[in-house]
Length: 324
Image (tube, rainbow, N blue to C red; front, side):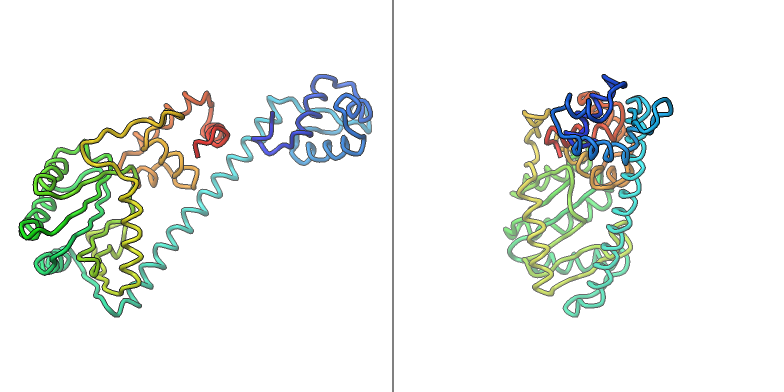
């Protein structure tokens, strides 16, 4: 009954027996639960560590159960505090890893260059687009894209497409609601390109002819600059990242249906995974390309379906049902 809260099945049985028979001692509890007195003592020790039992003031030497309204509520509050602390640690670790990768890529990419500012990035893209003759792979996260950026991309893409260069482009699911991005995506489709969307995407990425890759110097502000990478080991790793994201994405125009077993949409499942992994509402919203208000709305809907009174309880129930 209480296993989801970290209480063993045997201790949970003893706790229930103590609630039903507050007058019972250890030997009576052991007999009722079908365990030895030693096992009953071990269960009382476990319940004591969880603050679900306390020493009786009325009967010295005997333990009594703390009411579920108090004991279990305190347990959930402690676990929520622990979860919040772990979330903060996860977020700090993720940020540190991102900085480390960017610093190492910047210092070790002897077969590339740092492009500072949008003018430098655009100039490099134009040059690479002019010279490529096989394919261009692009990952473009975000709920929408600026019309001027899309116009610049169209200008750079038109000639390669006319030469028969294959293009695969990944957008976020939320861009299906953005008229400018959708119009550009359909323009790409009309010229033989492939366009897919996914709830969550890796960082912004463009790969030309499987030999040149552009990645942002700062994923939080992609307009600051980019790293032009030609080192085969790094480019191959980025190609693997793209292929994994592409395999799970849905072609533009196809309907992303709900999971028949859980009723979750792809966005809802990714939201649960991101929040369980320690991201805040704002951070999860940024990864999904949705606002924190939309995150709250999705979570309220999920909690209602799970019959959960708190996000912590929703996380427990989602894990029990195999949603995570």
